[in-house]
Length: 572
Image 1 (cartoon, rainbow, N blue to C red):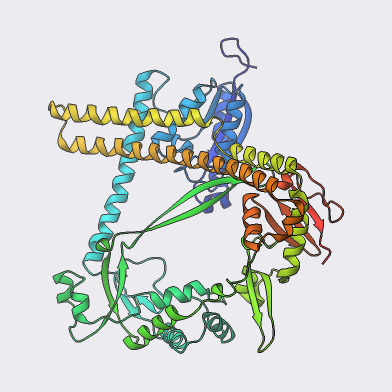
Image 2: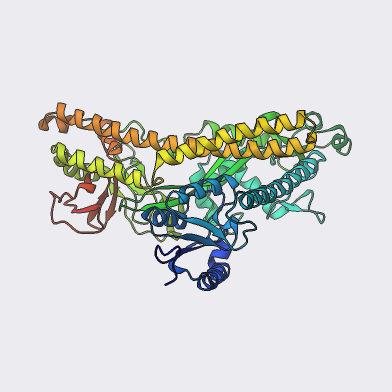
């Protein structure tokens, strides 16, 4: 094998990433990247240690399964270089390049891309850094121009069109205004009248399904959240010309008919972002999921776009009042102590909610039901039956209460859970935090230097503004990553506090007194243990802190289903 300074073989990790689900499904881009990297590695005499792909993963975050694998391999040592086709395959943010380069260098590993312009010299790194910043700057300028164009269009009273128009409307030929879609608007009016008459949202769902009225996306069953949002959407509520004129510019108001009423389509109302988060999967590994963040902008930043009105104003107001005053299904039975609330999970993957049935003059019956099956009804493929609440709670508590009497198992289980949580983070949290702190300090220094250059007449105000924007973006990113590390550490500290609190509580409670705990106290214990319980036919499967210690079931024979799970026979 080829050697580097006679110190051993040159080993390379090949890394490929695509950012969209479409690319991930086609696989063409990933295959093309790996093939190009493989040819380069063979030509340069590298031994390929592993080929790692990240399908459907954004470069705006380092929280990726493939990238985590790369970082773990680098930390293990004996990796000469990590190769990618383009620099933005590693990350789209220059600050992330900085972090990865620093981290890999500590293990004697280089980070290389086939489109690198520079070399290992300081000048080469400077060249790549400048070109990365220019690429990021150009992308930001395009996004800003697009956003400004949409804002200007909305201020001119023109609709910002999406993939499909709001239900009940059509786009005009120019796709900058809404027209009434009569068939759909009749459905909208039907929904508003049912709500105004006091019909429950669940009953409206059933009626629309029975009548075969398709949802806005073409599905058979209307989501209750869609129905609720429809009632509160200002696009359906008529406003007088005077009310609209106070919200739009004089030019827009001049084009409106003062004798008509208009609905309002709000633009720039919310700011949405998507982030990838990682968490323990209960089996010693990690799971990744997308988390959507929606932030409501200040009211003064909202832009009102007038649209045609169709429904009677009184009808809309009555429907809104009825919806606000109604008692939603999710509020029923809150006086009962549901000790497994938030703990039970259906085998289909959905959570299990609570349900109470009452008969006239008779007792109440309480159940835990699959949320997905309850929402979708007959079209749902889930076959899990509802669980009688009192039986399920007694079965789970009889198992858990017996284990709680052994402090060693509690301590061992919580310790394993804490170690799993630590494993989902970076290899060295303190070192990564220090790197981000250095990046923040570097940004502060650069900002001051750029300002000094402008004061000395070496740069123009426009150049200064561009450079300060780049520095501030990098500083904000580094600050956000540092805060994320802090939150992760706080979560681990909370787990440790829960462990100590739980051990102390169990030491103070005599075994006979465990049965006297209230449902709320039991639920608190379950949450501190991070328990998750799922029913399977006649069995239950439990995962969490207690199951991480390898205990055996006191209720029957043990069934192996994973390294950190226990299954016991449900005797009910």
